[in-house]
Length: 432
Image (cartoon, rainbow, N blue to C red):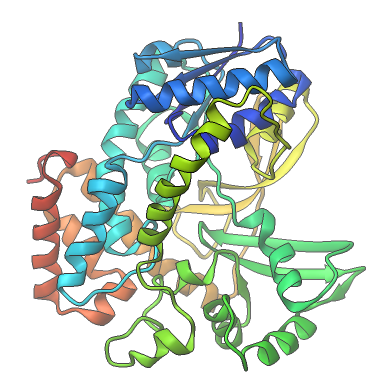
C-alpha cells in the first residue's frame, strides 16, 4: 500500500486542505494516509475529520494515526511536513515579547528577523532528526515542506540530508490574482514570470496577450496609495524598486529596514503596518477552533472543495506523469545566477512522474537580487548556527538582519539573543 505520511497532522484545518485535496485525486486510490503528531488529542481530531471526508469522497483510502513518528514514515512515498516546534506558547510568544523589551517591533516573525531566526533554531534540529527517520524508513520519499521559515528549513534539509525535499508556500499562486483584484483589473489570459526567495519573490513579468501590464499596474497602484489600504508596503517597494513582491505587506514590512522605525513611528500608521499581527491571528485561531471543532471534527456530513495548495497536484503529477507547474523552494544550483548557490530560491518547478525539475530563471534585476541577499545572509547564518551549534553564528544572523540592525545597537542585539536563548530553555539545543 502506497503511503502519504503527514507529520504535524494535529493542524486539523491544514490537514483538511492538503489531505482533503488528495482525496479528490483518483491517482491516490488505495493509498494510506499516515498521520503523526505529538499532541494525541489533536491527532485524533484530525483522524476523525479525515474519516468523515474519506467516507464521503474516497473510501478506497485508509486513514491511520500513529504514536511513533518512524512507524508513520515507514515506507512512505510522500511526506508532508507541517510541524510548529514550540507552538504559539511558549515559542511564538517568546519570539515577540523579548524583542519588545529592546524596542524591536515585529509583525509576523516567522521568516527572518529575530522571530524567524529563533523559530528556525528550534525547528531545524527536529527536522534533521526527522530526516534520519526518512533516510532509514522511507529513503525514496519526497518531502513536501510547508513549515516556516521556509528557506532556512528547506536549506538545512537539502544541504545536510539525503532527503528529496521541496518547499511549498501559498503566496506565489495567488500573487497576481490578488493584485489584480485589489486594482480592479481583470485576471484573464495572464502570462507571468516569478522568481526570487520565499516571501520575497518578484513578479518579474506580467503580460496579457503579449502586452506588458506593469505600466497600468503602477499607475493604478500610485493612485490607490492616496488612501489607506492593506497592501501599502508592497506598493511602496514596487514604486521604489520597480517590481511587485509576492508576499503580503505585513510580512515584507519586517524584511526591510525602511518601514518599522522608532525614529519614524508615523510610518506604521501611514503605511497601515499591523504590529504584533501574528499574535492576534494565533489568538483568533485558537478562539475560532473552539467554535469550529464540532463543525469540523464531529460532522459526518463534512464537505470539501479542492484548495489551491500545491501538495495534491504535485502528488497527482508524480503518480500520473501529467506535468504540473508550480512555484517551489529549492537549492540554487545555477537557477538564479546573481544569488548565492547555498541559498534556497523560489522558482518555477515542474512535477512529473517521480521527479521535480526546477527551471532556470537567470539573472534578477540587480536591485531585487540585492534585496534578496540581505535576507539570504541571515538565512545562511541561521543554518550555520543550527548545524554547528556555535552561538556566535546566532549573533551573526541577528546582526545581519536588516530590520534588527536598523533598530538596535550591536551590544543590544547580542544581549537580546542571549535572553532569547535562555528563555527558550530546552526548546533549543546547547550552543557553544
